[in-house]
Length: 375
Image (cartoon, rainbow, N blue to C red; front, side):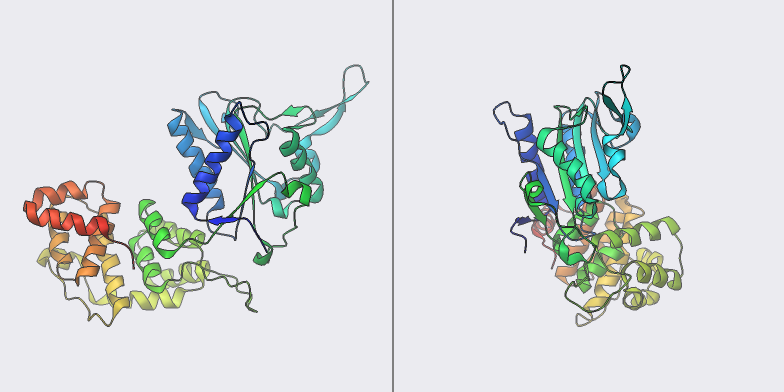
C-alpha cells in the first residue's frame, strides 16, 4: 500500500514546482526528485506538461517537447522518455573504442538535452526493464550516465502506474524509490474534472453527461471483470475530440465511439434521446424552451448541454441575449449551471451580459455565476 502524499492536479503542480525550486537553489545539495504515481488515464503526463508550459510562460521562453528543439536556449524543453519503450543501449549508448583504443566511449542516440532548461520526464518507470531502471538510478543519483551529464537547468521527474492497475507493473528497487519524493495523483473529482474540461474545450454534451452520471472513471481494480473499454478522463477527452472532428454524426456513430472508448455507448445515446424532441435553431428563434420536469434530471442535463453547445458555436451579443432568455426557462440551479458553462467557454460572456442586462440584474447574475459549484 502506498504511503505517498495523495493529492489532486493542483497539488501535483505545486509538488513539481517545489522540485524545480530545490534543484535551482544554490543552498540545496540534494534536490527533491519528484515521482508521480497513480492509476492510468488520469493526467499524470498532462500534469508535467502543464507545469512545463507554465514555467515557459513565466520565464518568457517557448515551450517545446520536439526533439529538434532539444538544446535551444530560448526553449523550456520537455524531454518525455517513456522508459518501457527503451532498451539499455538506447539510453546509455553503444560502446565504441576511442581514438587511442584505450577506453570505450558511448555513442548516444541524442535523447537527452545537453544544455538549456526544462524537465527530463521518465514516464512509465514501473513498466521498464530492470536494466533500464538501473540506468535511470544512475541518472537520478549522480545526474550523469556514462559520459552524459544532466544540464544544471533541468530537473528529473518520474511517473508510473500502481500495482493495482493490472499493468504488469514492476516494483521499483527500494534504493531507487528512496531517491524520489513520492506523490500519488488521485482520480479527479467530477467537479474538478468538469472545470478542467470546460477550460480545455471538451464538448458540453460530454461534460454534462459526466456531471449527471458521475461516470468519469469506471475501472474497479478489485472487480473480477476484465473490460476492454473503460471511462477515464483520457477516454472522455478522446470521445470529445472524435465527435468534434466528425462535426456531423449519426446516433450509431455516437454509440460506436462512446462504447469503444468508455463502454458506455448505449447509456450515453439513451441519455441523448431527449434531444430528438428539440430543434436548437427553433429554440433560438422563439427564445424559449419547454424544459422537462425536474424529476427527469438526466434529460435536463442533456438539454442544458445541447444549449450550451449551440451557444458555443456562435458566441455573439445577439446569441448571448437569446441564451439569457432560454436559460430563464430552466430551474434556477440549472440556469446558473448553463450560464457558468457559457462563461467558461466564452471569455467575452461577462462583458456581453453587462451590455445587455440592467445593472441590478447583471450584479445579481454575476454573483450567482461566480459562486456556482457543480453538483
